Amino acid sequence: MRGIILFLIIVWTGFSSFAQWQPAGDRLMTRWGKELRPDRVWQEYPRPIMEREVWKNLNGLWEYAVVPMGSPEPETYEGQILVPFALESALSGVGRVLEANEELWYKREFQIDPAWKKKRILLHFEAVDWKTDVWVNGVKVGNHSGGYTPFTFDITSALVKGDNRLTVRVSDPTDQGIQPRGKQVRRPEGIWYTSVSGIWQTVWLEPVPEHSISYLRVTPDIDRRILSVEVSTESKGVVQVEVSAGGKTVSSSRSLCGQRIEVPMPADMLLWSPENPFLYDLSISLWEGNRCVDRVKSYAAMRKYSVKRDESGIVRLQLNNQDLFQYGPLDQGWWPDGLYTAPSDSALLYDIAKTKEWGFNMIRKHVKVEPARWYYHCDRLGMIVWQDMPNGDRGPEWQNRNYFKGTEYVRSSFSESVYRKEWQSIIDHLYSYPCIGVWVPFNEAWGQFKTEEIVRWTKDYDPGRLVNPASGGNHYTCGDILDLHNYPTPELYLYDAQRATVLGEFGGIGLVCKEHLWEPSLNWGYIELTSNEEAMAEYEKYATILKNLICRGFSAAVYTQTTDVEREVNGFMTYDREKVKLDENKLREINKEICNSLEKK
Image 1 (tube, rainbow, N blue to C red):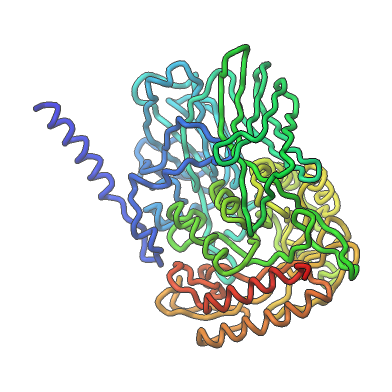
Image 2: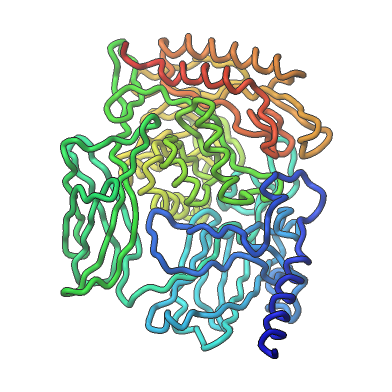
């Protein structure tokens, strides 16, 4: 009887805790946000490119407090915050701005499964914005600076039996700092959005053996029919890679740890493309003697991104040695209820699936890095991704009307080092995801510096992908692409005979949907229309202009944008994803025609 009473107390305590949580404020909500359960938030495995079976999710309700910068850990916390939603978001349950002179503290308890007793315990943060310090049971276990990539601490030596106390301190200067931040500002207006501070992606625990696999770098080579796999580990043993399709092994290879593994692929290997996004399954195992000490699951695609001059002398983007006109939306990845964080994995998938349904073959991920699962969904569905660096430091520093190179903005040495560190971290984080086709280190001259050097480094660090030096920014004759921005209509006002010329942004057709607005007023688009029919006709007009410019030199295009974002109402969908503004059948037909425009007849 006492056991039943104790069980009911535990259940009631948990229920009461969940019942206290509710979204902050009265902002626009998505259907996924309305259905959110704080005890089931973001339960999916967070690292699909390197998966182990055993892990523990730490998402859910934590305690939080905001204190003046430099204060000790508060003796009492203010209330509960729902991780992994940023402090400023409605879904965090808090909904307040973290100022540059403040620090955000988190606290929670966790227990270690007794079955993990002989394992090393890793604590993973998928992303925290921006500067993070972490303690376990009062022992400092590490710190990290950077808002967009994962970091990990080995917390084994700090653990105790029973309850363990996890404490996190975060500071974030947002637009008062030089760090990468994308479009975040403390006082949002126009094209600038609400700030995002603190934990905004999954926090989790993972038990690993004494010697384990810590990182994979997977590189396909379709011309040589080789899949290269580099495995990071402290072991002196042997690594084995098995490649399978449909449960059947098609190839395998072994090497000593520290050596690149080259797996020969069969003559009838399947290539990845938007039309056929075929993925091979990988099993990577670490052997010491006759014993397998660690194993992870992964996946890979055989595909190639390149450029080549066509019969008319125009440099074209190619996929798998075939010309492909890449066309897709500017995707900013913001949510009215979660800001940087989608309410759920289903919500995250929804935007990509709709983009695919609309006939696009590419997405430009704009000055933001998504959770790893977003790229996993792009891999599965077949969406090429142009990945922007979330720039920071100064705003646009235009040179000579943006057309030719001039004297570049000079960053401080600290600002440079922060940029370089995070850009390399982003590339390392996303390197093995097949969907990434283009790296974009700068957007519209925002903080643009040492362009030729940054582009050269990026190309050397990842020679298997294309580099777009500055989308719509100050133009330098380096990298693979010249990228023009023109609103609202497509216009080919510059052309590069040595690189692919693309239209990196155009469109921005604004249409207000009154029941689906972030704010009732102050809404805008690059052109403002009043009906769905007008907006569809305007899009058809732009598409016709774009099609006529493809034969004259455009090799890709990006339409602004996937969804409305805060005060911007120029999305295909409303900010809450409840309404598609254009006729989806017409949209799909038009977009497919554009994407297929370079196919040989």
